[in-house]
Figure 1 (cartoon, rainbow, N blue to C red):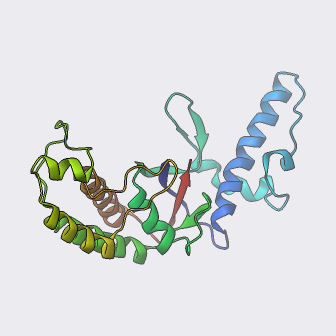
Figure 2 (figure 1 turned 180 degrees about the vertical axis):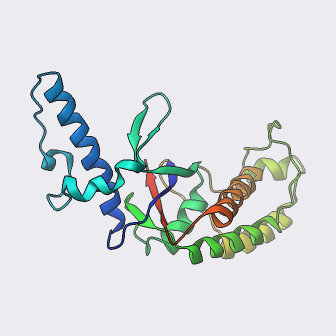
Length: 219
């Protein structure tokens, strides 16, 4: 599972999916122009790409100055600036589904407001205040299960159950295909710490009058 936070220039009246379709519309146009330049037939239609006819090229062109090269092995142009990325952080995903997606876990795109980031910051801080572990990431126990931590004397069963009960109330893990483990391990706390760093950076540097933030999950 990969989960993402994107930043993009704010356009009044745009829905979350309007930004996605504008990005796709500009990519579609580049493909069409390249085909024409190389004297090749461009077969796909807007419908084939899943782009609604309401997303005209004129509407999408408001983002042309925002295009940047993104991606790792497969670089491409996009209007989106990735400001957060997680893998198998099911508790972070569950928080966004509950707070930003209205409970709809559908791999779509959703706005995240400044108020929601402030709430996430507070949640992360509450979680990290309960962290009982001082295990380095290089340790074999860092990514292990709760039962292994208990068996190795890292934490007692009673203390773990007390910790689990508290975290279930603050930022619970979520089971599911491709979602990763559900134990409250050192890795759980590391992802919360990384989330806090991402949120702090957004709150310190973001301009919510001129930018919007979108959350997206994929698996």
